[in-house]
Image (cartoon, rainbow, N blue to C red; front, side):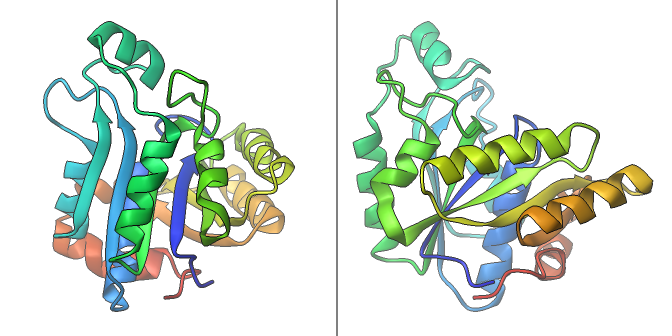
Length: 226
């Protein structure tokens, strides 16, 4: 499947593999000769300077990767900003920056914080609302777990996107186990029946040498084309 100009990477929950999936998407697109930028509207939990953008550039190689706001506490953006004494940028500011990046790159990957409906600003704006701001040039990739409970969580996320009339590219399994069982294989088949399954990322992919990660990304994301 050919990805849209702007791709918003969301997840069914926190810790499902959004950052590794974003890095793999960036690698796969760059391997096809596409220029890629990554934007993270709200980066929280950055007290040690270990941001998602840093991890993405480590794995995917040199590219434009930046955060709209960086917060120290490992919490959702609104409570983290309150503890840090930081005013969160409005969604319009994030949308404007994404459009700027889109004017000079083939693709902009926008990584959300937590799940789809986590609030990103003081007005209650979410990644879904950011997708509305960005319009028809944007679509969503949903990162899900292959484990127990994923069918309900993924269906709820897809339904929330559909109810808002937001374009969905497909689903990526962000943490495929080394030894999957009947549960994981069954969930993989069921999720593929809901939406196109764009790919499957091994659960320890981030531990691979970056060169190996980049070489494998196109294989993992076999459902993605330039």
